[in-house]
Length: 406
Image (cartoon, rainbow, N blue to C red; front, side):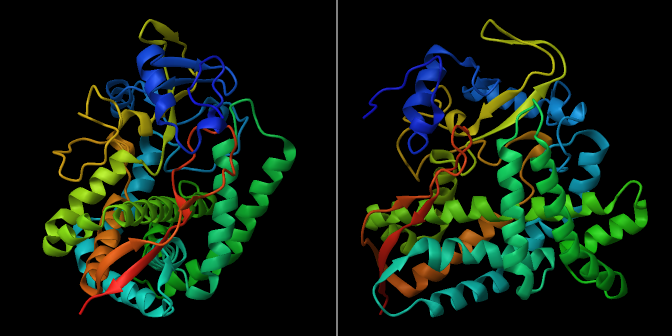
């Protein structure tokens, strides 16, 4: 069994379930490491990650493979710059403001109550199946404006799409991958097109209506159907996975710290700090990329224009140069400026949704259950993207016992 990380080359897969010793080694010995296997420069220190994320003029979110046509355009919120990014982001933001989230709190609580009521009486509950997957799945697809009967199909297609996006390289994509992306886009359009026409006749308070209205205002040349689909798929991805993994990880931790459950029951003001510290401690998104538009230097390493830089959120949030005692989960920490939701113009638009959803879930659970106990070992999700540094730390099984209050 491997007990310590080594460099040159780095085997990310071997450290997928616990990458933090490897991150520390990289921060200390190679903070600007060229990963030849994946053709990327890896930045792991907080200050460097923060600099890259905050400077969209020098560091583009658009991979060179999309610039030169080697890759099929897909993620046009996350992998876009300038006016295209501004257009898509401003289109959806009205549905994700803190004010909108406050308006939706009763809806969040109602969904949570339905999920809790649906849990069978036997005392062992798998958090992932009972809450972590169905809550953000239902909420995000409702906010998008999709009817319940198409939720499963839309989610499956966007999962397939994301898996392809996250494992592509700038070297290009084989014809079968390009063909599969076109098939996914056509299948998504089959779902969305009739709903979009219905929204034109009967606008609703949802993301789909906002996207349709933007398309009608801008025209299909500026806002084609492909962009509409990409925006909807990105909203689902951004609104689902971070929330899902945060629920899994937070309740997994509470099962190991039942005294913290009691503190949260007594003081609901601690829910927010407990969530933020979990986002820092085990960032649901471990890494994403940027492309320098000019030659840059980090730690005496020259990174050429149009190379790919992997900025490792999960390492930046464990950097002892920024956070004292970073490998400990400390919900009382005076926590500022973690980058779990990124930073700069690409700061996650769905961050308020995640925070309000998880707060609603925790308040309802704390109201109805006096204690939480571990009921078995948790199991990580399998690594479906071997070799990819951005594998999240989520858990497909978190068995707990919830003791009813009263």
